[in-house]
Length: 186
Image (cartoon, rainbow, N blue to C red):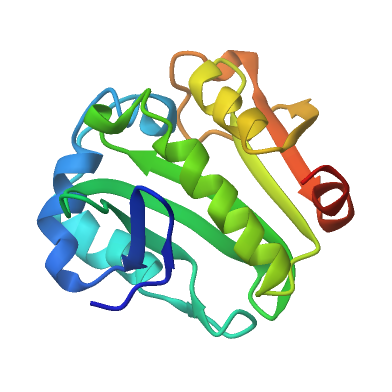
């Protein structure tokens, strides 16, 4: 198994097509998807034709993927995934951080642990200058992870939701961190 990054409790590895069933289960948990699509189910066809191609894509400026399957190091149990991808396909300057974890992994510090490790790797190995992360304003758990990972609140904004979901009327928030600020506070 290829390993992209290891932490004390996590292994982040590239996705493969063999992850289809894991992704299907994750994306069909209404609580996991609450702040993403209002908890609507995702079809196997959508996983196969839309989700997997995005997760398997290599970014030229990083020379690697932008999405990583997260497994518990001690057990190998699939916990979900982390996103750390360039906003511009050809420039490593700005990367977006994200995560989607199974409910069983919530409240255990995995999101913060994985995010911190990706931030460090981005600033030390991948040439990233700034990291950004977004969520719905009402998603307090995700906002807390961003803060614990070292990102700072930048702004509140109104996104263009194709279909409004509960809470979207409160807008979205953006958090960020620059390499300079990270180096100063680590």
